[in-house]
Image (cartoon, rainbow, N blue to C red; front, top):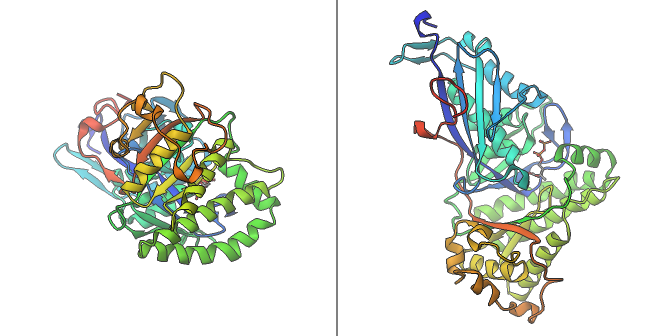
Length: 421
Ligand code: DP6
């Protein structure tokens, strides 16, 4: 480190997507290393609509590691953050910026402190896998800053120690988290099954369902399940291994009927093992159940499944439509059954890829009010139609993996001070 350059701040900004599991991860065999009891498969969501942006920086003037999430300082003391930071520092390499006269030796990384700022382009509280995108982005951007030679799969094994589902956010498209066999977790990592272009007709609509209370966290929920549920063992040993093979084939062959059947039954089984946990865990609510019956009725009325649904550790529904045309029909059904509260701005009720709204022929609230019941319900609404059960919808699609943002204006930290902008 040149003495005259002690004031420098070196930084990297990256963007990382969220993911939604279609074969669920639920249950650990090692709590500390975060090793799962079964493989899982996910679809990466388009980062244009849901992503985390993170700027990481290093400077000899920083006195401690600090982190800001959505502008608010948070503690980095947690064991999971510390595991990720330790694993990355251990793999750091020499970094040189000749133009600016900065040279960091491999060993310097152990003493140098970091400033990290992270921002989600969606509400953290909405329960949309913000920790997955966040931890993946932290690991990815630090790996770039510290010049790690590891590939994304090896990085995923580090992100995994931050949050299990985070390891699947190191790739775009369709991703498998291989549970691995090693006790040290070295073979428990994510691999890409197919990129986002492989099956690009798919459209994803997320219903952000208003939750009344804070749910049990995934971490403690799955711990209780492993300790008390008899069904979880059957699921992990007998059911998931077969479904993983079938799901890989469905993705490879773009076989939507199989994809939908597997995704829906696996989500339902995950919620069944939650119910089998003692005391039982309820993540879905009445609105979630009504969404399921709306989709199930429609799928049954058609020759073949039109839409798949899946729910994580909360009431939000993630629906995957076979193509754009189906997505437009789905959005009509959703808006008919789950209209917004009076005076809601349609522009804020359906966000993300608004072209789906256009395809559905809906320009304003008058068009929503004019919607008629879909044929499969014979004009009956699915359950009680009450306004405001869904907070908003997000239209999106399968998307790409992490990227470095080289445009400095996107950085979240000031390049001179290393503090949030
Ligand atoms: C229901 O990855 O949040 O979303 O590993 O304890 O951090 P930890 O849990 P987390 O669990 C995600 C569970 C899930 C299913 C999934 O994403 O596969």
